[in-house]
Image (cartoon, rainbow, N blue to C red):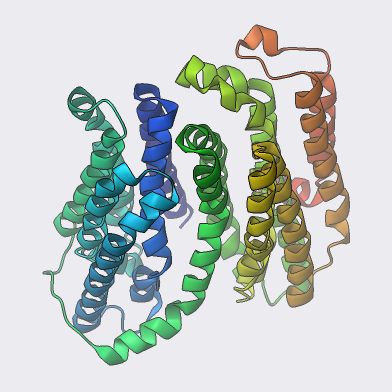
Length: 472
């Protein structure tokens, strides 16, 4: 079981890493302004995905009749209708969307992107059904091979185009590869059917996922839309790259944290003391993810950006540490959400993300009045802090765990983040590694070390695993 979990996590991480590599290569090839336009393509697809995400790929796994060929055909039929609806919707909003962002000349590209949801609607669901039988290989391949193909395609695309169109057609290559691969790895023939009773049941199953998808769209794309609208494509390109560099590692590690701890928590959810120990360890592990991100960005973020992207993205270096802290606070909510999920309380993630979404109008107003991206990041970070505190409160209330042991690690983690921000303020990050080293970094190391050493729950979990004493 552990090997299968590690295989699944590594496959997801590999796919995410390839997408980041693709974005870095494209950013290196084109101007920041063109990269800003390129980043709006993914946002436009996220809009329609957000409005039609009913978790069909999860339904076929958890539904008791998911193995039935008729149910699979009906879900594939619903998926095709979803893709067709998304295609039409994207065609309709392409013009207004382009005008909203101040790039009406790119409307044709948004119209062309509308074909991608239709392509995705033709995916074969066997790669998801096979997960019921613990066969994750087809799913892993469908997640990792298409990004690899899109990375390989960048070379010929760069020879043909020299601007944002590289990203446009790379997305087409990825979508086509995904659809083809799902059919190649399928065991059953592809069938489509319409079952309105199943559609109704699927809608009831998927509406919480739809709601959370709307909130996640605001979390991942809200500020980007605001920056693109008010400051233009150049600033959007810089902000999007800083956002992606700090977001991708947290998504991969947070997914790994959930995959690793959720089965263990579920196994002891009816035993208060083992559940208490595992819950604190899980919540502290999510703090460690954020600490590692902020420490890495604080120490080598600027030199890495200079190495990977060059001088043209140097303007984003001042916001790297603040945006890393924002992402770190966001990922810190993962632990409490996993703990609640182990006791079948799925609303924690939604509640935690609500504060960030509610902060978007304030961020928009402040950016409109000041034009200061850093102020917007502070507002988003404050919203994430409120979301974190509320998520921990809900986890304590809904799962009856004691959160007192978590207070000191959380406080020292906040102190470590504050130290990194102060260090970045008084010692501006430098593009060259030797220039980046200074005496005040000892304070950063000490506070981060103190935060990690204070995590008695995680330390106890590691020692028990090392000594072979599991919570059973």
